Structures are given as C-alpha cells and as structure tokens.
Amino acid sequence: MAHVVVVGGGPAGSAFAITAARCGHDVVLYDDGRRLRSWPGESLPAGGGELAASVFGAAILDGHRRAYGTAAAWGSSELVTHDYMGHWAGNGWILDRARFDEKARALAAESGVTVVSERVTSMPEGADWVVDASGRAGALLSRLGVSRVACDDQVALIGIVADGGGEHVTTVETVREGWWYTTPLADGRRVVALVTDSDLVGADRLATWMASLAETTYIRPLAGDVSTVDVGAYPSGTAYRERMVGDGWLAVGDAAVCFDPLSSQGLVTGIVMAARAATMLGGDLDAWEADYREVLDEHLAVRDEYLRAETRWPDSAFWARRLNPPG
Ligand SMILES: Cc1cc2nc3c(=O)[nH]c(=O)nc-3n(C[C@H](O)[C@H](O)[C@H](O)COP(=O)(O)OP(=O)(O)OC[C@H]3O[C@@H](n4cnc5c(N)ncnc54)[C@H](O)[C@@H]3O)c2cc1C
Image 1 (tube, helix red, strand yellow):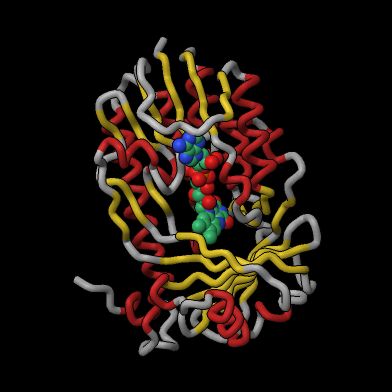
Image 2 (image 1 turned 90 degrees about the vertical axis):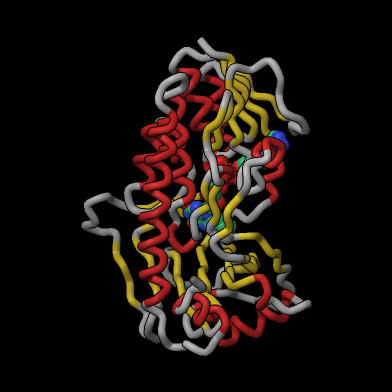
C-alpha cells in the first residue's frame, strides 16, 4: 500500500483518488475550491456519461441534463445538426461543473479518500506518490521544472446571459477570427463563448466579444439580453507536458494534457486516463504515458482536420495560422 497525495480535486484528481483508494492505497486529496468560480457550461460527448460513470458510478450524472445532439455551422454558412439519437454511444450530457466536481469529491471521500479543502503551496513531503491534478497551471510540475509545450495561444471569451431560446443542444459557429459555442444551462441562462487567439483580443475584450457576436448568424439569436454581460477570458489552448511521469510523481488531466475545447474531450480523457494510472501505480507508468501521447496525437490529427475544413477566411489571422501552421 502506497501513501499518495493528489493535488487538485477536479474530475481527473478525484478519478485518480477514488481508483487508487479502491486499489488499497492510502490517499489524501487536496482541493482549493477555486475552480468552482469558473464557467459552468461544459458537456460530455456521446458515450462520455458512461465512461464517467464507469469510474465514479452512475450517481455522478444525477442532476445533469442529457444532450441529444450538437449543431454546427463549420466550413459553410449552413447549420448542420448532429443528432445523438441512434448514435451507437448514446446521448451526451450538459454538466453543471460545480455539482459534478463536488459529487466526485464526495464519492472519493465515501471510498476512503481523505479530502482536504486546502490549497497546496509547496511540494508535499512524505508521500510515496505525488499526483499533480491541479489543472492547466500544473502547480507542482512547474516546481519540478517540467516544461509545458503549448500548441497555440487560444483564449475563450465567455459570457453568461439569459437564454434566448432554441434547442437544448450545443451550437457552434465559425467567424472570421475564431469560432463560437453556446450551451444552455439548467437555470435558464446560457454560456456564450468566442474561442480565438489571445493576440486577436483587443484591449477591451467585451468590445471584441460584442463585435464578433454581431458577425454570427446562429449564435446571436440564442443569446438573450447581452447589454449587461460580463465577459471573462480563460486560456483554452492545446498543450502538453514534456514529461507526465517521474520519480515518485505523475500528472493527470489538464496538468498533463490540455485538449482543444472544440473536441469536448478534456473531461472524459482526464477521468479515464487518471483512473487507469491509479491502477498502474508501481507498475509500467511509462506505458501509460506512451498511451496518453498516442491519444494526444490522435486528438491533434482530428483537430487539425476540422480546423482545415474552414477555408472561408484564408486571409484572417486565426484561420491562416491553422491553414498554414509554421514549420
Ligand atoms: C473554454 C473551455 C471549454 C471547455 N469545454 C469542455 C467541454 O465542453 N467538455 C469537456 O470535456 N471539456 C471541456 N473543457 C476542458 C475541461 O475544462 C478540462 O479538461 C477539465 O476541467 C480538466 O479537469 P482536471 O481535473 O484536469 O482539472 P481542473 O478541472 O482544472 O481541476 C483542477 C482542480 O485543482 C484545484 N487546484 C489547483 N491548484 C491547486 C492547489 N495548488 N492546491 C489545491 N487545489 C488546487 C482547482 O481548484 C481545481 O478544482 C473546456 C475547457 C475550456 C478552457
């Protein structure tokens, strides 16, 4: 039995902790609660609910909304609906992230994990394994000197507004300098987000958001009154760590690999790969890391294919970078 300290109680950290505890390890999970102040609208793709439930149990999906498809105007001005009805993997889910993360930590506690509501500010001592599950910032990896490789410098400008109506699906639409998504929330509001490159956001990010929203055909009518919206900026680039495993440490979830939000892949992959790592503690974690890199390579190949399918603005900075990547 190993003594394991997990830093970060998001989906990946909780998945790791709960699985390691079930394997008989002595696990302490620290979370500072800061992520809950972040945006609430995230979704699991078709089949993602079953994968999350395979780690946490079916109760993890209680109180979340089933999603029956997506709609996208990508590569053309036509809105194409992708219906999950009849999809071999079943429906997707629109999550309330605060609820999801709190439930995951509660389930970890029920499984014997010691859950501590505290921010970790230095390298934990006395553990056989320290797991960095602190998200994109990779709090411990930076201390260990493990570098981060950024594939782009994307940012999401996110506003939460009253729902203007429409189907209960995530809608995506490309514009000249990026792409939009909007997802309805359970409380009658909607996440309305522009994904673009950080250097394309002007000094006034609200003005950038508003001007780009006015360019959309399908997103604007779904957003209700935007006159008092507060727009936050969240890093959303694809990135990975040069190493994910070392002597007595490993990284899981966004601390290891950040996927493009276009894929809605971050949560499920983080959960599944973290749970897998927990079953391999003391075993061949290099093989686990190799598998993770394969998942990343596949993600990058599919992402690039999608991005290159949008050819309407070859002279815009955002799309030119994706159509003609450097090197
Ligand atoms: C704009 C945007 C939209 C997205 N949409 C989707 C989507 O629709 N579907 C999807 O699957 N994915 C989506 N993602 C990706 C998804 O948010 C991440 O993949 C996921 O949150 C990663 O989970 P995690 O557990 O690795 O990290 P996080 O969720 O970031 O959790 C890390 C936890 O660690 C805590 N923490 C951090 N530092 C410390 C510390 N020092 N001490 C203690 N605790 C600490 C934080 O408070 C947090 O609770 C999106 C990402 C972005 C940027």
